[in-house]
Image (tube, rainbow, N blue to C red; front, side, top):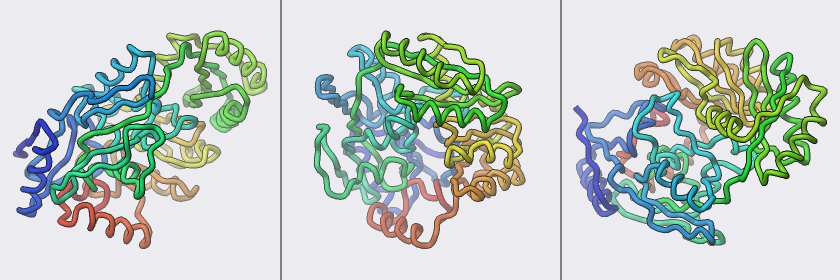
Length: 387
């Protein structure tokens, strides 16, 4: 059975990593374990959890800056921001529909996985809002990078390097985020379209309009629906939705979804709830040029699909088989895209590529970086690639 180490401070994290490094023993790194089933399983006798390294350490609403220890629940951060009318810009998802309801994700885990919601297309990814990081490298040495102000100057940007590295380059202990004011109102234009290709064209037209679309998704089904979100002050949202409806009327019958219903709709899209993935399904995410999204859905031939980010993010769900996985990989490769085997049974994740193979140059660069950050290869070994 895997033993759990859950220090209450950064010094304890550093000591646990230093001990593992000295013994040459791998560590599985996690927050509360909500994304444990994502990517490849880690073979380690001990798990280093950040769950006890929790709490907001700095919040300056006027400066749009918040710092929190890595194990701080996202829900705690969102509640503190909501009191001051602010939000985490990237809409990081909980993904309970994919991984099951649990304790809820931590801010460190969301940064480590670089997960972003529907606002990604206009506001950037999670990594674009990380201003500073404290972490422990694979030798048990604590370090920090970035700062606690919006206009900070740094040399080597380790914040972006660690964001999305899934704990393979360092154990994040604290994160500083840029935050922004929350919108007063949300509204969505829903257009019934004849097919996915038309739907993507409608999304593209909306994103290219001057009306400030902040979400663009496409629900597959017998009657696909193109969804375009506008967020801002109430009067502005009403005006821009009306103009957008006029501009996109040629694509199909359009209706307006008002504030509370609109917010709930986009929370669901960020959580991939419309994908309706069954417990036995494997789940994939494919990133492509938006115009290639419908073709990927057709080529993969899987029963459930959802398109976000203007058609550039394709969620797929279907049988957890090597054959289905092969079709998804080929569909992504054929259009120059990338894939992630987001959820699957552990034997499948252990046996098949969960990410596209790297070229020799990129693999060599990654190897050199890891040799510096984690020379003994003990942090989440094999989480992303077999070597």
